[in-house]
Image (cartoon, rainbow, N blue to C red; front, side, top):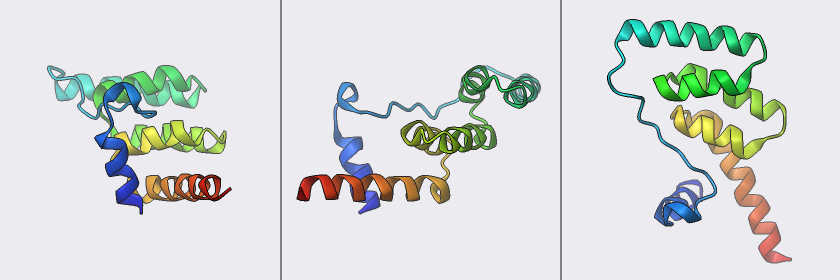
Length: 112
């Protein structure tokens, strides 16, 4: 069911998707630049500046940082935002339970 839901979402036109993702980090950044940006984003995240940190982690494609942002959203019950971050981080261990929860919710709604 999990891969089926993902396939259905992936088959929709971009404007109809409820989760917009881009998992390609910005090209042209050197390794040193990425390290410096990731350190800055970690500092921002530790200061509670989640959205600023998120923008940097998306830019650099730093999967651990994206997962931490997802964890933050998950704690705030922002499950779709968390799912987006986990998918960008290619973190199946954390994304699949949310996809399953969404699938179960939709299933219950359709049966009603």
